Amino acid sequence: MKRTNKGKRGVASKRRSRRLVGGLRVRLVVTFVVVALISAVTSTALAYRDARTAVLQRAQNAAVNDFRERVGAVAADFDVPPDQRTLSRFAAKVSEGIGGKIVVARYQDLTAVSDSLAETEGRITVELRSAVMTGDDAAFQRVQWRGEPYLVVGTPVTFADGDHRTSGLEVFAISDLRAERDDTAALLDSVRAGIVPVVLLAAVLALLAAGTVLRPVRKLGRATRELATGDLGSRVAVTGHDELADLARTFNETADALQASDAELRVQEAKARRFVADVSHELRTPLAAMTMVATVLEEDADQLPPDAARAARAVGAETARLSRLVEDLMEISRFDAKAVRLNAAETDLADTVRASLALRGWTDRVQTHLHEGVRAVIDRRRIDVIVANLVGNALRHGAPPVTVTLATAREADGEWVTLEVADHGPGLPPGARERVFDRFYKADAARTRGAADDSGQGSGLGTAIALENARLHGGTIDVADGPRRGAVFTLRLPLRRTGEDTE
Image 1 (cartoon, rainbow, N blue to C red):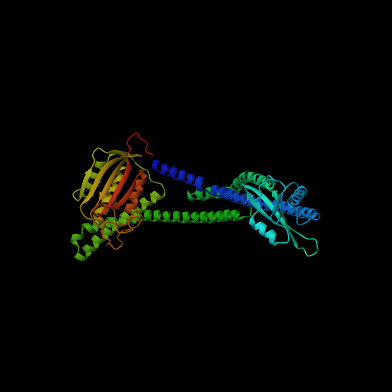
Image 2 (image 1 turned 90 degrees about the horizontal axis):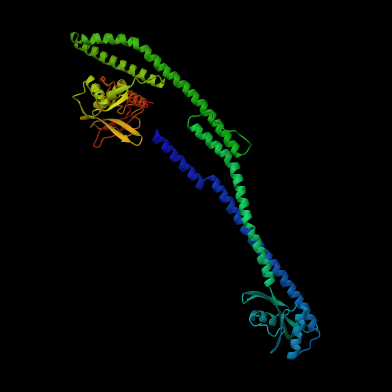
């Protein structure tokens, strides 16, 4: 029992650890958090992109419109061809009208900058110059210069004579976009900072949702385990009209059907057991008379004609076999009715085995290796039944030598006594090991049904009765193939002595 409890506790702890690591609750929370995180990151990226585009577009449109209008206003009083001084004055006036931005005016080989200290070569690209030179309207380009963003707007100046011919004057304005960049970065930081509370909120919501979903699942699991342990009255409360409620209703309906079937089977089983017990009991009286008659016929068989003598001996053998079958059925009925009690006393096990073999005349047919001085609290009659069944099976269906070995063993859960019965026959056929202790099962279905010997075999109940007697002592019987050939039946009993707990 201790070993079994440890195994159950180990399995339960493994199940709990698996639930903690990969349980449905963890998976739900992780899924919620991942979805929330992906949604937040996606929303942040889209918001940042749209905000950045809107800010830059607004700054760009304002810069282009203001620049175009200012250039048009200043160019109305500008005469070509200009000299360097005139061109510089033109650039300064345009810069004053657009907020002091750097303005570059170019006319053929002349170049004037509103801020003489400003470096413009790296910010006005060749592509923008080509677009202004070949176009008839304003062009612009966003550039990075020394790691900082700038918007460069350029436009050709045309004559106001109606044909919009270019005058050869080209004007460029350089606008600083660092303020817009800082605004979009601040927006990104604020949205990014909002991801943490969103993820935490998602985790809380996931826990709440997991609790709502898993609570009925846990109740259903608890009821299922109770049902598996034999509590057929286990039910779950049905609340709501969702899929979990349908599952709970289905479970309750299944449990109702199972309980009804179990009750019906129990009634039928009780009737069958009662029938077997009643029939066995009613057969005892006529069998007693038949046995007396058969005994008389067997004693006088030598005086009868040969055919009559054979018939008398056959009737005697079959009557004895029928008597043993009735006794076995009554014994099984007592086990089923839980009416069997141990008449236990401290006994020498080696003497018990030797007495059982001698009673049936098997002493010369069986090799024994009995550990002397092994004493335990047992029911001697029931141990005799076990020995008779196991050794009888080995003699009937095995081959010599048949050996009986008595020994003791100390294990983690206490001291045990083992009684091993081995033969050197053909062994058990495939699939027989799992059914050898079933009632009325015979490993060799084609064997002849001759007269049974003193072992009480022939009905298919012997091994079943032996196992029940072993369990009554708190032990068991195992079967295995021999090291070379044959079958090995091993009786294991707890080595209890007087004064120890015998429960």
